[in-house]
View (cartoon, rainbow, N blue to C red):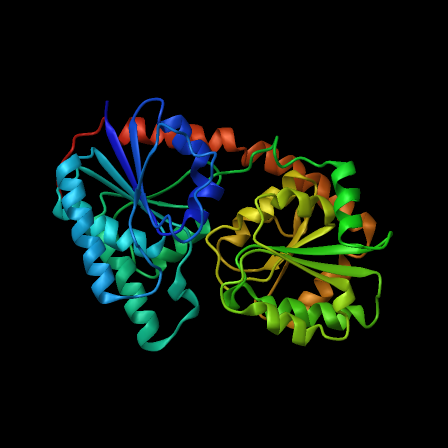
Length: 382
């Protein structure tokens, strides 16, 4: 049986995006995952046939730790002689692809899911971009989770002449249309738990909470709108990575009764059900999976007009777009979404498109087809 190894940093990526792919791959391959399992717990839904190797891979640069992990990966790859190594996340990609090249792994794949350096400048941008260039040169195959990201990477001359594959219509995992389906009773229950009054329009942020996600800008736009429309509510769901909660509380200090902060949850669908509009005012995004998860449940989105998100939203048909960081435009998009007729029209098309183009089954099948193809290709070392 052929052997595959996946290298990534955070269990959050594994838990949210890869469980179904790995389950299906494990039917035909011996699958191993190298990950920092101490960061957050690995999901109990991980298929028992998948082997888990705990490595202290961190997102932050730590030269001693990074070199230690690199050498451990090289030894591990040389011992196990995998047929393919597939990396995700920037640090997992850099260490995984270098180690796989040195260990002479025949198929070396990296999946780009957004570029940290896209919002940086100066030396920081140069160094982080150089890391992506290095891992791209070490890989034999490259993937991205959106077609607009492919265009961005090529324009920035990150990937050289290596073709970049996109699974299905985009995203890493697609959307589980059974799990992410509307449940009216759950909607009512969640709104009651959050003490949200009836006839209130609920906006939802769902994702990692950091500066690049536009948390402060969304909070400011909400406060401005709330001064004119009291029957609105804002929910934040996700892991606070950069101490964003105090910032939200400061900005929204005069309307905190209309704001709920949930934190990380294993049931994002519960809060999508409670919402009328998903908000993703991000400055950088590989795709925006929360957008199609919400769409599958009939919840339209407002989001930044940036690469990645423009694949997830058809402007004016499944959601509204605004310039990243433009608080006036965010407020206007939120205000437009107070119209129930507009929301309903966007909802219908968004739900139809999510189920048609982004089903998890379709994306998983593309992963299976991809590996069937690349592992049968001549294994020429580069």
